[in-house]
Length: 86
Image 1: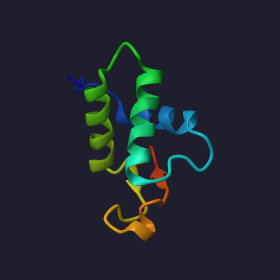
Image 2 (image 1 turned 90 degrees about the vertical axis):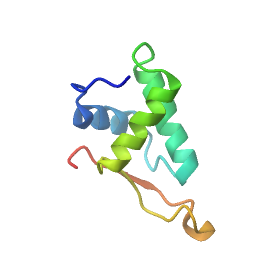
Image 3 (image 1 turned 135 degrees about the horizontal axis):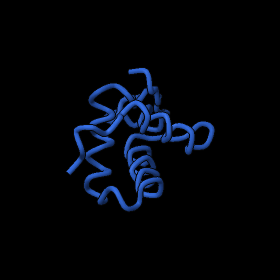
Image 4 (image 1 turned 135 degrees about the vertical axis):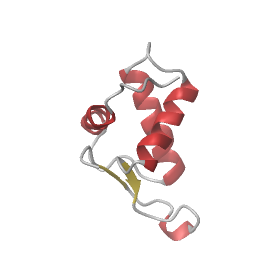
């Protein structure tokens, strides 16, 4: 279960600082990379499912935003915008 007192802004900032330049790219690959990064950063805090749900939460609240359209192949490899100032 994800704690209500988890600072999503701080977590987004940490996530952004750990990712390399130009990462993540692609809708599913990007979500998987961010999930895996959260697991590496906080290995004792989240299960894989919780990390996945947390990425979905960050996306729904505007902290991470896919800049393409995952339904269209031509823009499915677009980058993500990661902004701790959502």
